[in-house]
Image (cartoon, helix red, strand yellow):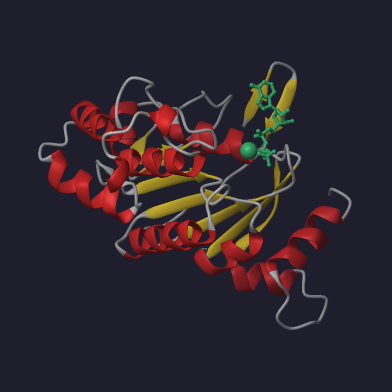
Length: 236
Ligand SMILES: Nc1ncnc2c1ncn2[C@@H]1O[C@H](COP(=O)(O)OP(=O)(O)OP(=O)(O)O)[C@@H](O)[C@H]1O
Ligand SMILES: [Mg+2]
């Protein structure tokens, strides 16, 4: 649960994501997606409840939990006076990643910012900054990843590459939670989906399970249609 003062932004939310799974967190604006991801990542304290990251309780052993996770916020924050490559070196030092160049340089290639390695954030486009933040977050090879709208603002090729990067890490055994409004893209990435409305879970399960629940007898209902049917119904 998360309260901001008297306002309850997220309540009674419980779910688990296994290694290899990608959970799509969806819901209308203000449903509590960002709040949920921030609580899971330990950026803001939850107002109750428990978060376990790769077996580490986030409240009891935050350092061990945070070592296993990466959180990618919707608004990338960078250091104004560090170049792209210096960002990787700095983050690697914080996380104690020994041979950062051998991990960092392929990440720059993977996210197509190698040619900007000596540029400062002010010299990067929005999408490039987003890619740099993601490269930095992947340096310590996290097993649990929380992405808040990682596909928004990327060009079509960038979206495809980001999708591939996410799916590849899930296939390698990472547990991933991803929020997005780009439902047709989520359908291609996610194994599972959780629909939030006004801070409460209204549906979750595999894509097929959730589609079936809102199918109204039709076959092949899209996630977009599921979303509209699920969130359009009166709250129960
Ligand atoms: N720092 C804060 N203080 C008070 N209320 C907040 C704070 N952050 C978020 N909220 C409220 O909590 C609710 C959930 O916000 P949140 O940002 O988690 O939504 P979201 O699902 O991520 O929405 P979006 O799709 O627009 O990104 C909203 O009603 C919002 O106004
Ligand atoms: Mg949000």
